[in-house]
Image 1 (cartoon, rainbow, N blue to C red):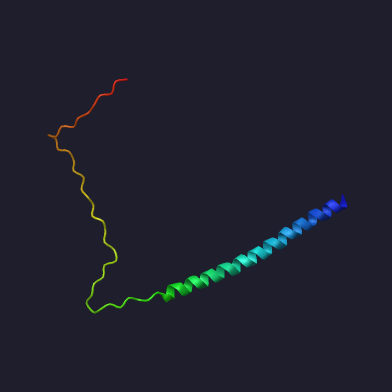
Image 2 (cartoon, rainbow, N blue to C red):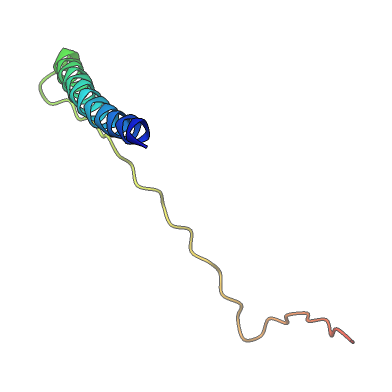
Length: 82
């Protein structure tokens, strides 16, 4: 019974230490990724524009108006018999 408790104790301690180590490694990995992402954003060259040049980044889509049927227009409906 005593050896069983020792095994359980070492398993719990092992998981605790493993969790601490993994948390530390994950933190370092995320810091490294964050630093690389920061360097990437600064490396993008800025476009040089001539004076008076206009650049449009976004062109909104035009909305197509749906044609509503007029009062005189006949709409063909089919009856469904059950």
